[in-house]
Length: 406
Image (cartoon, rainbow, N blue to C red; front, side):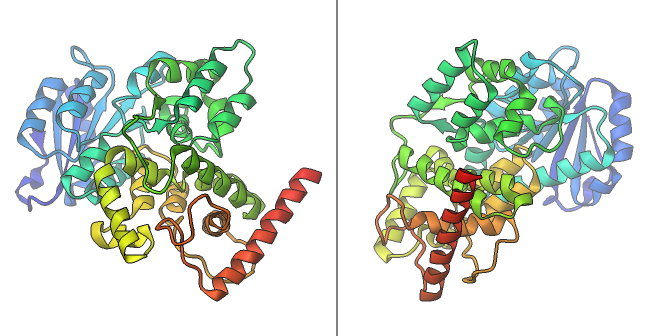
């Protein structure tokens, strides 16, 4: 069990623990990771027992472990970390593997890094993990979000997905069409499709994610690994039912895809689908806080997102963005989700980015939303912004016509 020579520096530096059962591998990591040492305290543990000692004696922000180790495996170690140190971000380094290893890893791993992993990629992954972990204050928030390995899905969608995947004749298109209606399932599938475990690299949308994983792997994920879990009957979202929330996300996704420039259409659709994910996340793990914020927003007649930012330092889109970043989703998509509820400029020029398309789509969708005018979920519109929304609505309708008639 060793720490970097800079251990006398200020205690506020983030603590990162690297674990392997081969001392020479750790020695190589220690040399390669010198750029991290200025802002991080680095520990290197030989095997799971040493790692657990470090965890017991230090507030570890991020753990990076080899998957295959003699005795206690990396995944078994991370299961202990998940249960005993829920605010620690869990990364695993491993080579190519099969579907069962993916299923085993799902509940305990935030991000899977391939072996060999370049120094630059490892430093980037650790730096991002530290950044997103440190954002989640107070510790109760970090525990709630970092401990989240899946999000709830409405029971009817859960059952329909199980039924489809049990059918020998099901197609990827059928499964993708259903998954694209459910932000919770779609976010988890994209997490694993973009991970090194599934080959890594860019996945443009849900269909592409399912193609990469394959239906056999997806079936194991859904039926065996807890990828999908039904909504807890006690979970409620103030101002929405689950069905209404998912329908709204689907509408924002559809409109964003029509408004986006062609090269940004896929990211806009996914960003639109995930734009409501923060509310689902908060309802699932921070329900009491969400209800308090919603009640205050109702009392003051102000948007929920403004109250959340004032009282907590971050609103639900930022929490969703941080969770998806911890899961390793691409930074450009995370950035879209983070800023999805920002108010766009009131102009009529064509959209130049996926983010702008999602921001506009959200305001177009709220014009026909199930929530009542004045609801904390509704963004008040100035006269200029309302005129712009009318223009964007017409552009979305024109986009639908083009899709319908080719």
